[in-house]
Image 1: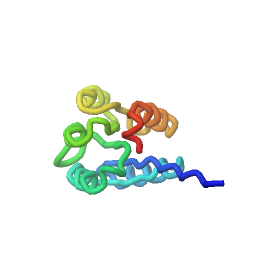
Image 2: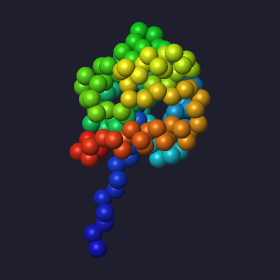
Image 3: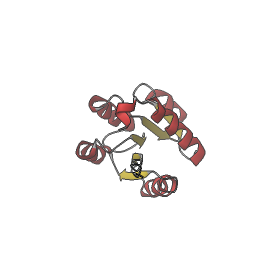
Length: 133
């Protein structure tokens, strides 16, 4: 009997200037079977994305970061790949509402793993099958 091919892990790019938040994302999402790549700022995230675009399935980004905020970063990602799910995480509700013009979803920092995972699953399920390969 022929073995079935292994399913590709979902790869997340998590962008936050706070090393504690990045570490939290790695622990939280890795424990749920996701592959996690982190970046400390928007410029570094764009560089990572350009070199590994075919691997990255979704992005979770802080809104308030030096040099480039999360909405500006999301706009750059969408210029390259409109199908890429992008979630902005922030502690400020007005920012979350404003960012909706540029991203697929927003979430409050400190939300539970279940809330993050439900949101990710919903966004990833919207992609056409060819985008998930």
